[in-house]
Length: 317
Image (cartoon, rainbow, N blue to C red):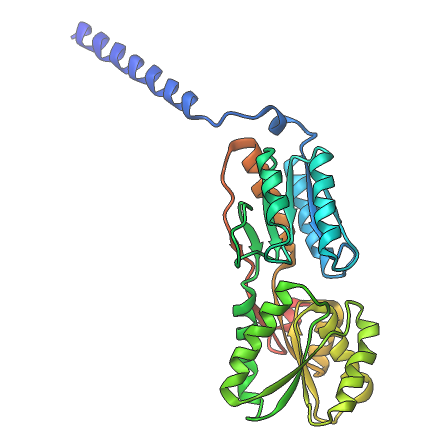
């Protein structure tokens, strides 16, 4: 009996040692740079000072603090694809371990992203992705932009008369995200033969007021303004508050800001579409850090397209 117990115990110990050996063998191997507190990432954007980027930066900073790494938010002040590509190359040469890019053009960033990946610098997208052409980026955290445009138009369509005219605003030219939203909106408006005029009021909401007001004056048949971004949606609300109170005009658009949310409460903006900019800063940091430290491959994250109107604006505020 004692011998049988001893043999069983010996086999148990041998199996345990084998199991522990397997566990050790399958543990992810830390890269030396992954262990370092000096691991650093760069976010390269086309609008580094835009108000929209404030929650993106907050998400990036929170994730960086949580993981004990360094992140820098850099880029151009306005849309300049050539300059943004140059900044990405500078980030590659400056020793950043990983890069996040808002890929605002479907082709312009393909080559520089391949260059970064070839040098062992992982790249992920944030805010805007490239679905039109092959791209070496590992993943993207962004809204499904065309579908988001459709979602906004579908929500509003019952309140827009057939054969009406609407004003669609895009705060910048050459940004695929805004073009995708515009195209999604127009695809739904066609169901009721609704015509649209597209203008570019700029990425400064205060300056955009004059551009939108001029367009409305030139075409008094337009009673609805549909924005595709934060600055122009804010500007539309400001125009209605300043010039068209109680005159039957209304607006809707994209993104959150304190001003936009207040305009929803006041009735100047019918609704806006959220895209969770905080997670667009947070998740790329997590993905790049886990890839560099543990080899975990990043995956796409849909930032959603939630409608914010009077029914839920208080909660959001």
